Length: 275
Image (cartoon, rainbow, N blue to C red; front, top):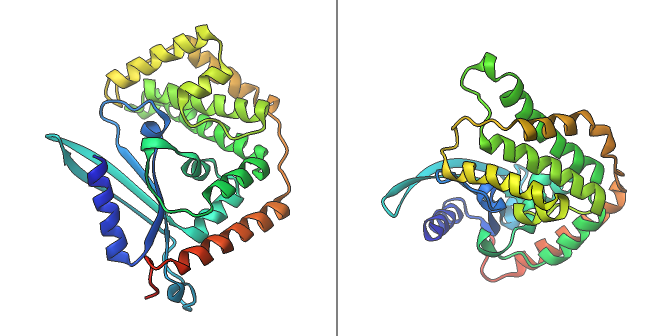
């Protein structure tokens, strides 16, 4: 599947005249708990030519598309989303947790890495990101899933709670807890996150939910009263998760400096011609 994804990304570069600096797997595959029928959520950052950035009409700052792959005799769904490097940095400045995930992805979940100052950027984000915003984003994700699938499911008919929705809610709460306790973005791999935030008995119970998620289709209904209560209780005690907003002006100066350095290095690369 990796080969097919890299081919699609190469075609995107050719079709749009851009250079992809970073491409990673996101979502459940990127977090280590994909179901058998999970999509491939490919996220990437691209760079336009200097000529386009200096044009009165600014280049398109995002692309999204989906397509199917035939892989080992089975149809796989790929969901692609890319951001221009300026938009990517702007969302980092806002401490967008999803965008931060792209930056911290490692190993086989990284498809392309031509980012020159990624390590410096990761260090800056880890120090200066807004813990308040990061925690709020996680609780917002949990609330959205909870209200849609756990409360209103009887009214909406088909939107029943599933093992996937339990895991998404639990992951969001544990990420907020980790950020509050360690003043750092949460680990991307779910097993590592659990090891830092749950007891051994709790990990065993959540792993049982994970086993259901991985073994069943994404829309298979599932209920777990204990962890349902855990989610509700965490949402009810949202005010216990307080954290500072951070110094946005200092963060801006640091990110802006790193962006300029990255652009300068990228534009000097012989692999990426202006045009």
